[in-house]
Length: 269
Image 1: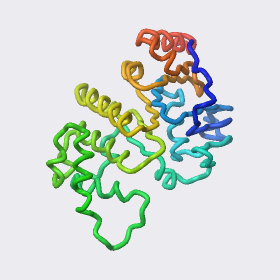
Image 2: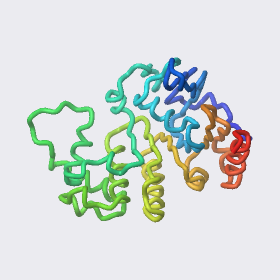
Image 3: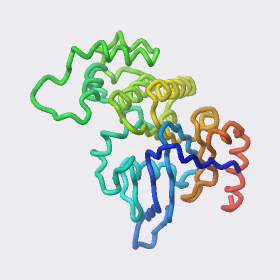
Image 4: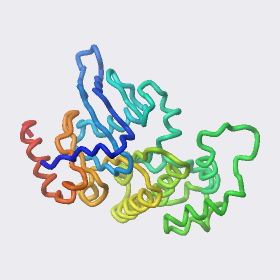
């Protein structure tokens, strides 16, 4: 299988070094998912991650974001050791979009209020107004990136938007302030096919327009093949495919299905 070529000129943004992760430790249900797992994400990469349930895809995202602690090893963001940094502090540098559109926005607030909250990310909150109307032109310019006409509906409650509109807004909110890494956690899985296509196209456009580094977990093999600069396939806590730009362009959906089927046969399915 094609492997990414080492490039000393590339700058590492995230490093997972010798990671161990054990679930249900010291119980009869103990499961070791990661043992001496290593992964480097380089600046400017857009990584698509696929794999069966239990392969370690979402756990990898949770470890990077701080939603789960590691049982061994180190996690670095640039030159900073964030292994034991709490999740809320990592949020200043990491934007995350979840599978559920409701998790990235507040339905009872307007589009303007949601964007104002996102705009204040990492800043101290006092008793001053939560909405800075001097920023409205900026919010409108950002909403125009979505091509959904939401820039003319700033006073609309987010709860009345469709799932696709809310997910597009959640994507924009996650990238509104400067971040080092965008984490996409199956962010199109809960949408209908048309909305899924639209949000994926918007994702690619925003990642490129803002020059972001991104890692995306997806069950959509076509999205994994068509989008991004690097392809990972995981199985039982290991990367069985790790293909950079030179190799990724040669992968087709059938190639990934073949590996999936081989893994399934090895597991006795």
